Amino acid sequence: MAFVMMMGCYDDGDKMRLDDYLTNRCDDGRISLAEAKVTRQLAEAAIAITRLIRVSGIETDLGAETGGANSDGDDQKALDVMAEEIIIEHLQNTAAAYVLSEEQDAPIALSSDEAADAASSQDQHMMVAIDPLDGSSNIAVNVTVGTIFSIMPCTNGPMPCRGRDQLAAGFFAYGPQTTLILAFARDTAPQCFVLDERDGQFVAMDDLVRIPDHSNEYAINAAYAAHWFSPVKSWMAEVLAGKEGAYSKSFRMRWVGSMVADAWRIFRRGGVFLYPGDHRKGYENGRLRLVYEANPISFLTEKAGGRAVNGSDRILDLLPEDLHQRTALIFGSAAEVDHLIAFHRNE
Ligand code: P6P
Image: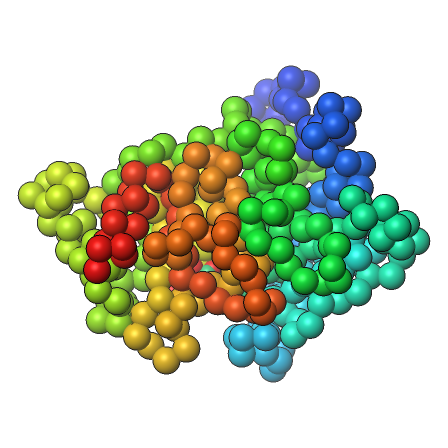
């Protein structure tokens, strides 16, 4: 409160709140009441996760390993498990019939009257795929982590759809601020929100998101350069050539080790993110998962005028065959991604 007093009176009267944003979309028919409720509940879960993170290391060490492992064999952290539990609890009594989680081998059925009612009206039946805590290895070192979500129709049991058929997608980033970027199928662009922790409300940030077509900033873990396939190696050679290279400009690199943090930066100021496949055993298709990481990020990216591919193919066209299948992921500023597509198609 003292900080706010120093800044003088804070009037957020003109800021649209997430609640208003959802109500407006229900009123104009762009989303259903059921989609609005699922989104509201995800936001409430993110607020609860924010509160947990703020006391991590004070009450409990949420970055501590539980001794368990997720579907991919990654060591589970206490906050991974707690975040998933919070999200599932908040999705009870909504139209979500299943939760498909990175932390679980199989879909979790949510039995509630609302889910049953939604099943009867096929257009309302939905499921939510989540990465409950992306980047969780960063909790212990106070680096931004996040929750990624994909809201999909559920017409054929818990079978995930192609990314282009998602009803909505978004992610929360738990950093210096807790932020949300969100888009629904009928939106022409994503909207960013920031959590005002003084009253527990997400408020809209400036205008709709548009990723600049060009950028001089890229995100990749360059430690794996020796393992990259030739298209990425060739692209990187041009990038490192700077003004004398094919792109006639100097670049800078950022790599947080938490995709939501790199993604948020790209949505705010452009850039290109790469987690390509490489020659390491098990990394032929990269590290990121199609259903609950690449698809939601790619849905948001295209809504914001960017591009998202696996190298040569559009992510949103890929047909998921397994809940945890991996995909190479390259997304961000359209012109920069186009350079990478050219290398993948010509090599
Ligand atoms: P590496 C976090 O574990 C994650 O899934 C993404 O958030 C992040 O971009 C990537 O893996 C980091 O991978 O191989 O650099 O540790």
